[in-house]
Length: 266
Image (cartoon, rainbow, N blue to C red; front, side, top):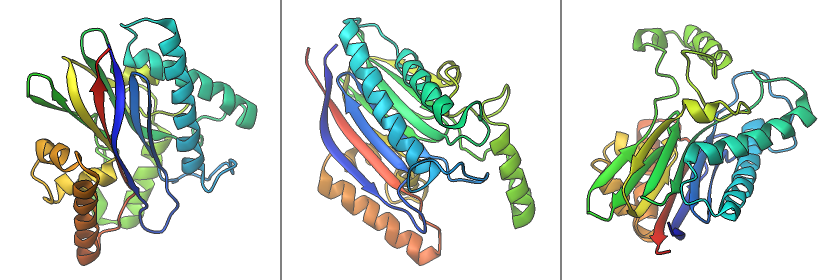
């Protein structure tokens, strides 16, 4: 099965808010988290913002779940199982702080990769991304769905109407037929998009803020994004080029985070 080895880790804060991304790895598990910006009244959790607190706590709980998974010696432990463990821990923490509150509890988009006996299992909730270079030389791109996909372009023309729709969409998350994200519901692990791939060579995990480099043409597609993320200098140059473009066009910059890891042999 092997484990992940750190290669590149870069996180750049966005405009006008605290850092709400996190990324990490432990043993055979790696992840990136993108805390969902607050639209509903915050709960006042003990951090710079509720989304920042959530991302930091889920990062910690994923580490605990990954270490626990390593302790089982089970080479076929799935990505959903690791996430379900972490979300179960989050649910207990949430209950101790805010009781049964779910709708206003913070959440995150995420991507998680779990090495298995046959390769790697990649799980995605919302709009984080994974690009995996396999041992056979091929490349696979895994994501879930954009966070605001249910808001039509014509509805975005009216800022007040768009905000109303975004708030309603946020209230309905993690319910049947709506967008599922990492929050406190364990069942979100089963609602994620999960892709099973062969043995990986290396992988980059990215928040949607970093993936704007693809959306805006700084790099041409997933393979070039992975290529740029193979070295700290190239990755920094890509994200700085993104920031310059966003500043020039007036686009509000989101937090941008990427983590590149390589698989070590068992």
